[in-house]
Length: 100
Length: 342
Image (tube, rainbow over all chains, first blue to last red):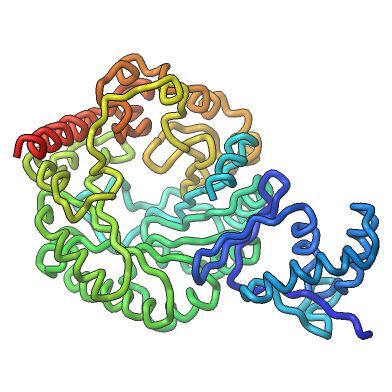
């Protein structure tokens, strides 16, 4: 299966506040406060890190099996994609130096 | 959202910062508290460095204001940089330089709200306050450009003697344009301490009419007085200034709030973290609880008062009362009493 990547929407503001990622949508002022796993996924949504790497990191960090981690990440990503906060792409959106 | 503010308070995070990029302005509003000369604004590189520091300190909500921020030639560069650094950005502008091209850029850069000052629905009143002929029509045109692009606009209607009766029309205008409207009867002394502009404040009868206007029910300053004061209120902080919010001037001075000109440090000489966490003045502000206010803590209106610590500071004592807010509380009480007896 080819790798997929996550890209953050451009109209989003985000800041880690006391360990939790707080995300604000400029279009409708929707607010999202992510838990630790969500924050890890968000931080990896740089357009260059494959989702599979995020799942691996979560397995390692939280001592969960790959299937459970993949299911949790998929559900989380689907939620933010539905709100147009994240996009899933099948090609890197930026290179490793952060150039888009 | 409240949980985020609570966490920021617990952790001492400046979640919200107003950053004035310039005091220069193309209007000369009669009630303005600023002088409009350039005393050495932060350069583009310096502003970016401050933004980096604020991002590092945990600031999410950033208000760019002035002066008129569109007078800065590097404004869009700074706005783009702020958005790239993850800030939620609101702008405060008179918008008379804001055309379709600027509206496009503001939309594309993901600004959440643009606040525009409208003093009256009548050009002769608005333009007399700004001292710029044609300014009302230019500001309204800008609102239409922004709304046409789906941007959120907030009309700020500052009330003073000249326009006291016009706010219902401004609110109606806002509704017709599909934008929000807030009214505010606060006129503050100039930053240099000159109090002459306080004569522009609403008269007591004008204020009473506003506070008893049923169409404004729900606006914060129309809260009726309540005599209930409990321990929790006495332990409360007077406001967010210095706790989760602060203000940065175009010269890099850091204050607890835009209305609280207590110098706490300067970002040309100090790091923001040092000022925020270690300034004696900021920590002095931070230590104040309602029970520490010798006059206000025993006042019958304490629970509903809109006391501004910055205005109290400008009157000489940040632990003292703010007389403008004392007057508002008394007028609210008169209004509430009249409502009971009518």
